Length: 197
Image (cartoon, rainbow, N blue to C red; front, side, top):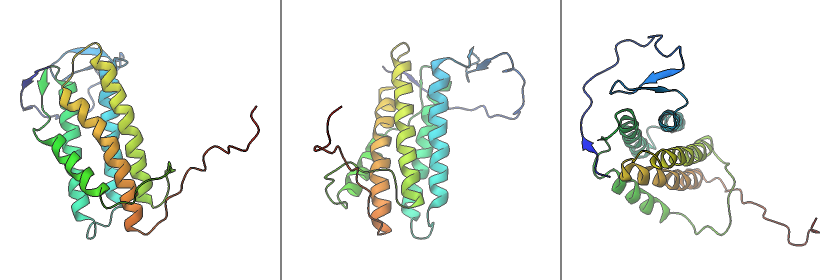
């Protein structure tokens, strides 16, 4: 897919419009769709991910974690760009190089972590646990965009970006726990000696 590139010039100046009281909502291009449309599901999941990243940023020590906070802010901007693509079908807003940025961070951060030998449970510091929430919401947002892509072609870079986001937040959760010297909680696994039912 090669959508057209554009920039958004209109800004919201009225919040309460009452136009959605009938169960429909407008895209940025004026098209009205049911609020149950898969496009709005994807928009909502991307927005929820962005909001959860805001919560994650609020848990950071801004002086000690300023670099990480700036990185998270960049992800939020990119997610807003993906949301803009959903609001204006056929347009590309995701900035070139966005995927490279998250992949580079993931590679650098993962190199600082011990090899993972077992599944881990979402736990540890408030920041790490919130990063796991971001990870799971990123997966849902990706699934919603993949579903929409089955009927309405989406920007391939945006699909890849959401896929990388879940990896980034998994690595980030581990890194935050390691930096705080909090031990990860490993999944106990299946007891191979337990009787089968």
